[in-house]
Amino acid sequence: MNTWVPALAIVAAAVAISGCSSSDGDVIAPVTMEVDDLQNATVDLVVGQVLNIDTGDVPVDSYAGDIADTSIAEFTPGRVEDDATFNPGVTGLSAGSTEVLMSNVDNGDEAITFTVVVGDG
Image (cartoon, rainbow, N blue to C red):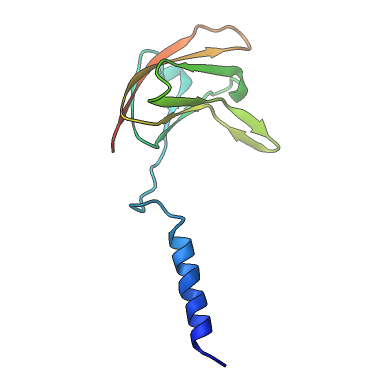
């Protein structure tokens, strides 16, 4: 039996797995803020980082978001899937600054306006 075959398989697997990691190997932790703390706030993110918005007692799927410059940031609505709950969030896409307007579509609460500043990291 050729002993090179298992060794090549291990090397190939290692190369395939390493191709799945980010280029610098760092994981960017999300920034978590409560929705009540966002009014008129400035939130600093880096490209690829997520603002995780804790809605407290309000259902996560009740918020809609509007981003002034969608090339800088993206809003992701909250949702419930099976037994998992996902908060709404904003993801930094490219360097710059943009306004975010969040509104509660279920109860018509006052809209929340805040600024997201995205840096290159």
